[in-house]
Amino acid sequence: MFASVDPATGESLARYASFDKEDLEPRLEAARHAFLRWRELPIEQRAEAMQKLADALRHHQQSLARLMAMEMGKPLSQGFAEVEKSAWCIEHYCQFAAEYLKPQHIETEASTSYAQHQPLGVILGIMPWNMPVWLAFRFAAPTLMAGNSCLIKPDPHVLGCAHLLDDVIEEAGLPSGLLQHLPLENSLTEYTIRHPVIAGVSFTGSDRAGAQVAKIAASEVKPAVLELGGSDASIVLADADIQKAAEVIAASRLINNGQSCIAAKRILVEGAVYDAFIEAFGAELQQYRFGFPLSEACRLGPLARQDLRHNLHQQVLDSVALGANCLFGGEVPEGDGFYYPPTLLTDVTPEMRVFSEETFGPVAAVIKVADEAQAISLANMSKYGLGGSVWSTPERGLHVASRLYTGQVAVNDLVKSDPRLPSGGVKRSGYGNELGPQGILEFVNAQQVWVGE
Image 1 (cartoon, rainbow, N blue to C red):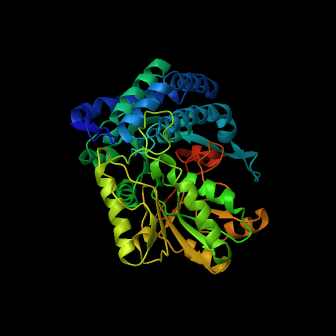
Image 2 (image 1 turned 90 degrees about the vertical axis):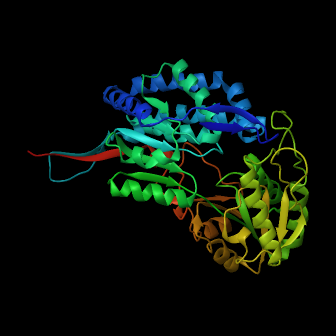
Image 3 (image 1 turned 90 degrees about the horizontal axis):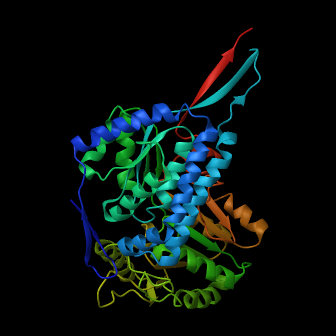
């Protein structure tokens, strides 16, 4: 059994049954049969079916946003935005999948030669709790439009959202077995990956768990896409718009209550504008006040679980013990729920946990740098390489961006995932791409076709 807990109160919300092997087998078989039918449909018919799914998502937008607020503490307005973004992602692939998947003709001495893209089969998506709607459809939209079927293992802490999404899928009228949620115990994950029906795996989560998924998939010679943790650096140079940088970096750091892989986490500020940035950035962070996540005015809710808050607070305490200066925040508030205040740490150095580890919560680590070269060096001094941002003139920002070892870089804006662009990481942040033209090609066979005279 799984239990969901309201992070705003610490009280139990509901209990859900988990699948065992006997429950799993018929769903795997249903997914296999659905794939065999789905892959034969013209892509236009797939798009018609998927558009109904986008419509059904919007129909349940309020209910899904409320459930995310209740199960993981996401502010209600951000839940609404997550559902809308998920529907947009589906519609993007409905519109552009045919273009992304069209055969690539290559001139050779053959009468004709090209690569065509064939779906692989049943793809397993292993999803985290922090964006239960968006991450499900970031995976499923391109994968389904490529002609595969999808099984999603949701995080056990957001099974209410998973059950509601099953209702959305049924309302949309997708073919039976094509897109299913599997409430599996972690002990069944390896068995499922190794199952002969599964043709590939997409995993979003920690680098430690992702390494285990990659190991299992590789031993079965199955492709995997891994979107893992991040410790994104934001570089603020002396010629930046300081006020804009402070506003946007604060919003990036605190989105989803600070629980986003691509949030700004390490802020590297050139010495000439350091004091001005700290003043502006601190003022922005302090505008985010605790609120009840079901309130439309809430900008900052609780962390999703008590253990997550404990680990975040320990990262702060350990860093302060090594010399970090806590300008504000850094204390566990009294009362119910798993709230943690916006926390600003300065004088941060690379040996501190808030620099070397991913901080999943509303904690910002600021580092003063002497110049552009030191900023780039410290930004790249991380086992992660998911995203980053540069604040400067557009020309200088592009120069610095080309020297950052990350999967995504934004110049004078926050890092965000977009259905039109590839999203992925390097180093311990994973490999492969979600989204964009690249994302839909992750779970296809690029079959070479050669026609002689």
